[in-house]
Every structure is written in structure tokens, then in C-alpha cells.
Image 1 (tube, rainbow, N blue to C red):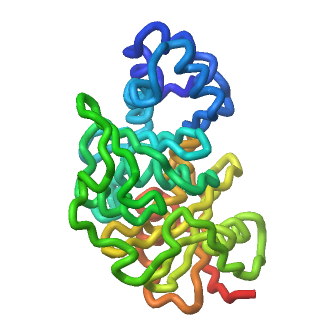
Image 2 (cartoon, helix red, strand yellow; image 1 turned 90 degrees about the vertical axis):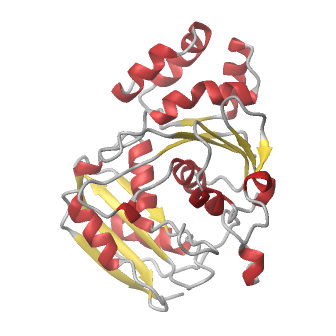
Length: 296
């Protein structure tokens, strides 16, 4: 079991501990539950989906990286595939507050990067802030996404975001988590190709600033993340943060990044390079390569 889960695991009810321990002890566990595992946990504990997701939130919150606030938020995004994806907030000492990641963004991005095509529900241990409500409204689940909180009945996102402003107001109808591929020309080594592939699958309907970041840690592992824009602009998730989400949830260490590649479209009307370089430097990485992309 990854050490970060130990304290939270000890607080779980005994039936859940017994059913969950083999899952957490698996060295390949990456904060993602397969449908058969979810079914097994429900059967072993007698909990329904909503109750089980709430019970698992302490484990999700254990993935938080909070050197600034010391306030851990956990989220679990439930895909229509039946897979469940953990998420947690992340902060970076030495970087600006605007570079932080919210738990809901983390869980949603984890699902998106894992190939999930739509979410049915998201469970969070604190009520989503306005930033996250707006971010969730960009999804192809839209305002029908179910939001589950402790001690409250499940409600649709529409109840948390009345009179919502979203992609349709800007005539955007292919939205976040819909399948899209910009088909940028692959080139370079494995890390560079991972960044280019991430950029190809990124979501930038408002600026055409398609971009991706790939990170390589000291052990040689590669983590790639994609840019995700928002109709309200400010809740937009940079590609570096997307890659850091994946690195963190797969058990990696942000302080172990040795090299990074940023790939972005030559047509971009906004650029990620400066912010990416600054945040990486705060994490101790000064080795950033840059690729300007053209379509095939």
C-alpha cells in the first residue's frame, strides 16, 4: 500500500478495509477502480454506489499535495464506463496561486486522460467552489452531471450552477471529453512524442491553442497531460497541471521531474511556455524542451 493511504485506510469501516486492502496492496494501483472492483466493494460492504464513493473520499483526499493551505480535498469521478477515478487538490510552493489544481479538476482530468468518454457523477468531500462548478459545466455531461456531497442528497450540477453560462453560449457544441484529435505530426523521442500526442487530444475550442506537456521523472516514467479550456476562460486547466495530476495520482513525486517537453500549436493565440517554465522551476526542474506543432 502506498504510504499516503495508510492513515486514511485506518479510519475506514472494517468490511471496507477487508475488501479494499488487496486493491491498495497491488503495486499497480493508480488511484483508479475498475467496474468489477467497484461491484466487489459494494457487495462486500452492502453500500450502494453513492455511499461507497463517499466512504472512499478519505483515500482520494490522501492524494492531495497541499504545502500552502494544508487543506486536503478529495474527489471521485464516476465514468459511464463504470470506472471510478480519484482526484485531489494540488499546490506548488514557489508558484502563483493560479497554478493550483482543484480536486474536481484532478478527478475529471484523471478520467479524461484515462480514456473515459463521459462522467455520470462526481463525489466530493466539500461543496464545489464556483471555479469548479464552471469547470464541470464544460463537460459533455453538462448540467446533468450528478454531484454527491456528505450529508446531502445527490443533486444535478444544474442545482449548483443556475442560469449557467457554458460552451453553447459561444456556439461550441463538441465539448470536453468528446473525442477529438488534431493529428499533429509525431516527431522526436518518446517524451516528445507523448507531448505531441497529448496536444493532439487537447481541448481548445476558444483559442485554438492546442497544447500538451510530457514529464519524465528520475525513474524514467513518462506522464503526459493535455490543455483543457473553459467557456469562462479562468477555470481553464494548463497542460502542465494536467500532467502533474497524472504523475501525482499514479504515485509519482513532483520533485523527481528531470525533463519536460511542451508542445503547442503554431496557430496558438496564447502561449503556455512562460507559465510552464516558471512552475517547473518551482518544482526543481529546469530542463524544458519546446516543440511548435503543425498539422499533418
